Amino acid sequence: MYLLGTLFLGAGGIYIGLGFLVQGFFQSHIHTSIPWWVGGAAGLAIAFTLNHFGVRIAIRGVLILATLSSIPFLILGTVIIPKGGVGGNTLSVFSPGETSWNAVFNGILFAVTLFIGFEAAASIAEETQNPRKSIPIAVVGAVALSAALYIFVCYAGTIGFGKVALEKGAWFSAASPMGTLATTYVGNWLSVLIDLVIILDALSLSIAIMITASRIIFAFGRDGLLPHAAARTSRHDTPVVGNLAIAIWSILLLIWAGASTYGNQVTPPLPNPIEAFNITTSAGSYLVELIYIFLALFALRLLWRDRDTEGGLWWKTILVLLGPATPILAFKGALDPFPTSPTNLGVFIAIACIVIAAVWYGILHFARPTEVEAAAAHAVEHHGVPALDEPIPHHSAGAAG
Image (cartoon, rainbow, N blue to C red):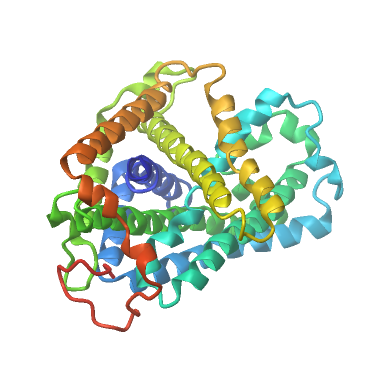
């Protein structure tokens, strides 16, 4: 289910959105037009190439792009906040004010979707020298750093526009809201950089999610839950079948988005691929958020199992109980009222994926019970995994990396 969610969200559907970001950049700053799918195809080619030639190269690419992407936003925030924006610095921007709870719930789906992927570091545990220490730091650190940057930039953007302008729709009417702020407070050069780094950040996400999704496919093949060919690795010790499967899937989504007519069915009309992107994004979000609920429920089971030895049981239980609240509220906001056509296709696609996952599991449970029982057992049977600089046999059941 998680794999299917990533395929619709960050390992496939993202290239539709990336194509429009690139097209918009060319129109605004280079004053020329290119087909929207060209940018998406170029992003796919870059993500596939980096993933094929090794996890180190791919991860470094992600880190470099993410770092470069944050710099212009940090510059903009450090200019706006000391100036006080339009009406001065105020904590009132954090107050819901007259916003309804239903609007808050609707915003939760969007907010959770922005943070989807923080758990991706877990997928490279087998390619990490000390995963039991490094992976928790990476996952929790990603949440902390992302939250800090999110609050900082959103606060700067809010006071930068000001309450009056925001109430009149200044954010939604701007083609590039942060670019508009950059031009107003710093200069057009920063606006160009912000529009560019938004593209780089989307590319960074696509690389990271391809890393995750391809290794899920690899793990399924190694554990006998997919044909063993799925565990085949390249001469660079990367999951070649996983990478190829994601590339083919992404190409199919680009073709589907270009051939769709969903944008003509909404009011006001949207470019057809944009509405297709909205559908894939919502489908992927529903699936991944459902996984977050499952994780929280099984965390409760782990706490109960270790209740006699687990330290800090009371506060850990409270945190785990808070875990499913966010995605549940996101579902409430997204599904109440139920989306209208064609946006509701995202819901139906998610339901279909849940059914596919359940049928797949049911078949495996009866046809390959031994493989199901032993799946991922290597993750808990021993503490050590091969170091990154240790040779890993090609086409083996070892770690892809």
